[in-house]
Image (cartoon, rainbow, N blue to C red):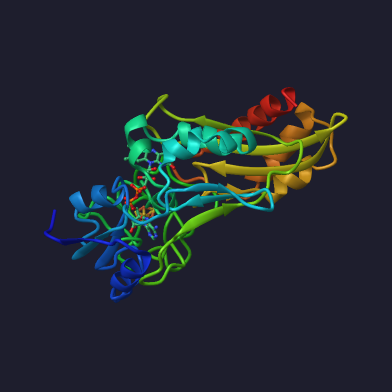
Length: 300
Ligand SMILES: Cc1cc2nc3c(=O)[nH]c(=O)nc-3n(C[C@H](O)[C@H](O)[C@H](O)COP(=O)(O)OP(=O)(O)OC[C@H]3O[C@@H](n4cnc5c(N)ncnc54)[C@H](O)[C@@H]3O)c2cc1C
Ligand code: SF4
């Protein structure tokens, strides 16, 4: 790991002023915020990230979870994954979020990992983590070792010829819209839709400490056996958490049957472009979504 300077920010203005001095945006920049450190420090150890200055933002007053007047929820950027998962409002109104958090990483990591850091974690692509290998995300224009290499865990939706991990297109090195000095203060959730049931299902190589090969997050409202509202997102298969309006359209107004779930799953994966080793994910993701829909509507 390269040497770096560490400073502590005691108020948001101080953090923003320090971060704004970076010449490039967020990831890869020479001045970086550090929260739980569970992602950034990993990459620093591998010399993938080599910031000259770290600004410790863990003392900022962003550790609250607060109900909003409209029925939604405000989650402070520094709220730890464990605290969020076990918060009574989250468990009651956003069960899918609580379940997703609790199936991520390990108890120790969840105690450190923050809400903002979770959103800004970088890809797990093994070539991104290996500075000896070409990777357009790490070194723009150097190539993508994963396309002809080990790509079993990588994306099948939203990929490009430049990158098959996260947020590709022509600029895979750019993963966020944040500019130097931009500090996430909180995340707002909309009010839960009345009467909904939600569920998160994660399929992975082992039961803990592992990322999804395929996962499904579903929020369903049903009335008299008919689905009146559906929200569907897939994990582990897209270049980012993959909302599927196609699946939602197939479900809305329909009865909760296996045939309808099958149609929704087919629609969600219609544009999948598997690589040499991850073709199995197409069927796995379909089955994951269908099973999640079955479980959530059984309890409705
Ligand atoms: C073994 C392992 C398994 C894991 N499994 C999962 C999993 O299954 N699912 C999952 O979702 N995650 C998983 N993770 C990732 C983990 O959730 C993230 O590492 C963690 O959420 C990052 O949060 P952090 O606070 O530690 O971020 P840090 O490492 O401190 O920061 C990460 C990035 O966010 C930036 N940042 C942090 N806070 C702010 C802010 N307020 N404003 C602007 N920028 C900010 C930092 O500058 C940095 O770029 C796993 C991690 C490990 C090591
Ligand atoms: S898939 Fe993306 S992150 Fe992985 S090697 Fe290719 S360019 Fe790099």
